[in-house]
Length: 116
Image 1: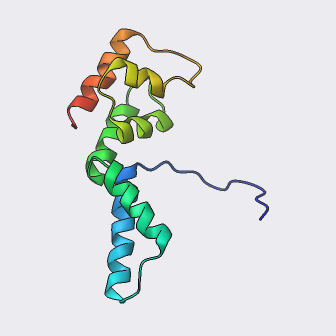
Image 2 (image 1 turned 120 degrees about the vertical axis):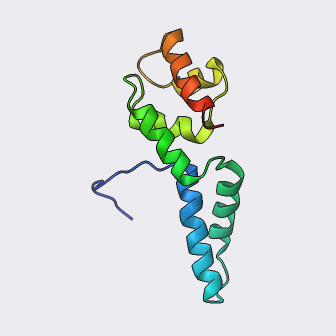
């Protein structure tokens, strides 16, 4: 398959994926259809790693997005991983072209702590 261009891109958190996959699974169970292997595996993964509810994750992403040092991609990654300390947060920023000072790291960690 040849893909020529990307038309649209939207980041979603694991919690939002979990919500969507649960809806699909419910529809399939109502129709008495068996879930595909990929759907079952994806749902298992989302249930294991989706620590927040979808609305909480969206709210956290919005709060993080208001911060100057956090872009959309990083906000979604932080909401998925819920870092507990500076080292975990620095790992998320490892590929970024800039690094954060201690105050910025603490501000992000304090915001995340409200959702744990």
